[in-house]
Amino acid sequence: MFTASTPDWTPAETVARLAAAGADGVEWRVTDQVDDGTVGFWAGNRATWPLTGLEERLPEMARLVRDAGLACSAIGGYARCYQHEDVDRLLAATAALGAERVRVMVPALNGSSYPALFEEARKDYAWVAERAAHHGVKALVELHHQTICASASAALRLLDGLDPAHVGVIHDAGNLLIEGQEEYRSAFAMLGPYLAHVHVKNVAWRQTGRREDGSAVWSAEWAPLRDGLADLGEYFGALREHGYDGWVTLEDFSTALPLEERTRDNLAYVRALAG
Image 1 (cartoon, rainbow, N blue to C red):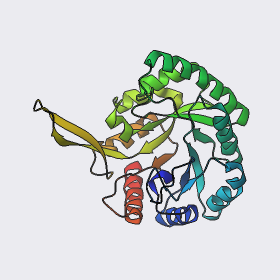
Image 2: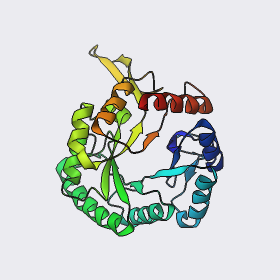
Image 3: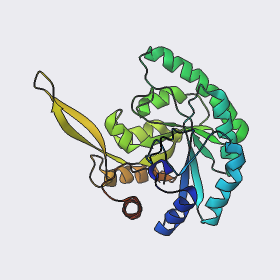
Image 4: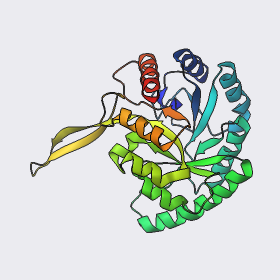
């Protein structure tokens, strides 16, 4: 479970409840977040570790995971590949925790020239690969809408020629329903050794209004795993056919069920799908 999706729980509560629900690991969210007095996925998330002062918190992070009988599947970082100082700190922290993998984000689409953004990101990720090798860990590009790597094809272009021992891709079935969807088997085959991690959530598109010309307006909303557009049974079947045997991290941002209930239900559902 990625702790972005467990905002109500402290780190200690998170690992205890994940262990009780039958999880194998936890993926810590690490970022300096906004604290506006509310509790939510992206602000006021109680299961988030701040990047500021991270090094001093590593022993506690490791102890909580160890005492709960879990593993740390990865670090969910928010530093982008051009933020070299923060990236290197996350790589070092990942090595210290024995987590092996850390998300290093790519540039968001910001109205700049896509070719220029992509060219600079290629240079930055070459640097990231070198630093990941230095620390003995792997940096992960997440397929994410509204970034330069919304699809497997784009991520392969970014990483092509870099050592897959130290860079890889997070395939995310939910994000791809918003932008970048490619047939699962083709995408996995395309990524080959770069397929390094999997995130699972789901999305539903709903009609939310009409424009002045009468055409429909559609919006993507996070949905419970069983209720979204992604056929997760097919997804896990394609992962098995490909031979994927790595981590599968849940990050359900729907709120139809209370957090503890949806955590238990999601773990049971995905375990059944994974066989």
